[in-house]
Length: 503
Image (tube, rainbow, N blue to C red; front, side, top):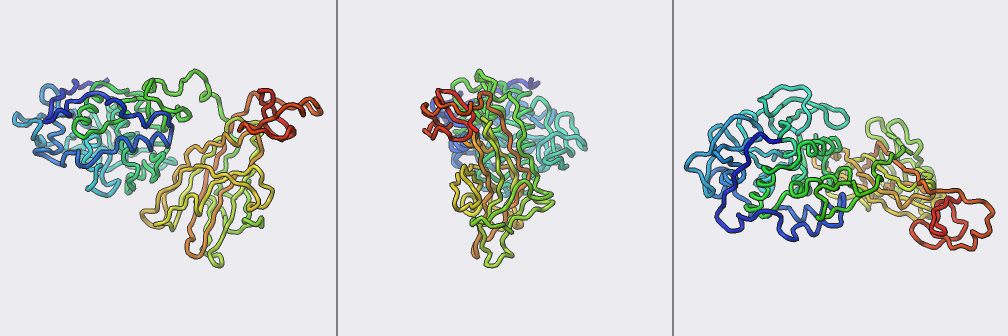
C-alpha cells in the first residue's frame, strides 16, 4: 500500500478538466481483441494529441502547472515517487502557473533518449513525466528499470546499480520502491502501447524491441507484470489518471483496467478483452486451459547446426544459402551468390496428428534492409499440409510472426521475439514448417533465426480408428476446420461429433 496521502485534485481552467472516470464508449474499439491486435487498438485510442498537452517546463501552461494538479498532496507537498525527501509547492503556485521547487526536476520515467528526440508527444506526456528529486534523477540516468542486484546508490526509495536483463546479460538498472513498482509498471505498459511506433535506441534496447508487439523484451514484461500484480492500482493512481485525462484528454488503460496487461503479455493472451468484467477476470474464465502443461516438441537453438531442419530451393534441390552460425543461429544471406538471387526454404517436418494446441516461438534479426520492410515479401514464415519435396508445388499458408523493425544503427536489428505464433489450425495432421528466404540483385538482405521452439498439447479426445470398420465409410467425415473430407483422411477428423485419430 502507498504510504503517501491521496493527492488532492484541483479544478483547472476549463470544465473538461473536472472530468473523472472513464468516458462512455472510450474503450469500445478494444472490445473483442487480444494480444497484438488489442495493443494496436489501444494505441489508436490513447495516443495523445500534441495540441492537448502542456508545454515542457515551469510557468503558465507548462509541466509544473500540470504537476500542481496531478501530484500535489493535501498539505502542498510534491508527490515524489523516487525519493522520500519532502519538497513543497510555493504559496504563489496554482493550477495556472507553477514552478519547480528547489532541488526538484521533471523526470521522464521512460527516458527520452530511448527514442532520440524531444519534439513529439512522448516528450511532453504527463503520464511519462514525474516530479523527481534532482540527486536521484541524476543517479538513475537513462537506465532501464529492473531488479537491481548490485546496488551502487540507494536513497531509501530508489536503488541504482546493475542487474540481469535478457539472456542473463548485465546492465545498468534502477529499481523503484515496492510501493511504486506497480505504478511504474503500468506507466511503462502505457508508453509501449501509446508509442509503439517510435524507434527505440540506446539503453532502451536493454528493455525494448522495435516492433508493434510485444515491444518489450520477455524478461521486461514478465517482471513488470509481476510488479503490477504485487502492487495493485490504488486511489493515487486512479486520481492521477483522471487528472491527466482532464488535461490531455487521454487515459492510461492499464489503470482503468488493472488486469488489461495480462491480455497483451500475460496469462490471458488466449482470451479476448472485454470492458465488461475484464478488470479483475484475467484468464480465469471457468476452465483450466491455460493451466494445462504444454510439452516441448522442438527446441532447436540452430547455433550448432541446422538439424533437424533441412534446406531446399523452391525447385526441391539442396540449398546453399542457409548456414548455421554459432552466434546468430540459422543465417541466410545471398550476397555472395551469383546474381544475389535465391529462393530457399529452411524446412522442418512436424507430426501434430495427436495435438490440439501448438505454439511456435523463435528469435530473429534482419540485416541491410534499412529502408525495406521484409515481412511477407522477402522473408516468410510458412506452413504446408501437402509438402512432398518440392516447395513450389506445395500449398503454403503464412503464419503471423512478429518481425523486427528497420535497422536503426549499423546494418542489423537487435534479435526480437516472434511472439507466440498460434498453430492450432495445423493440429491433427502432419505439417511442414518453413522459413522462406528470397532475394535478388536489387534486394539482397540477411535473416538470422535462432532458438526455435514448438510447444504442443495432446488432444485428450484423440482416439484411434478401428481398422476395417465399414460403417465409418457411410458416415460423413469432417476435418478440424469443419470441411467435409474423404472418410479415410489421415490425422484428426470429426465423425458423429467426435474427434478421431485416423492413421
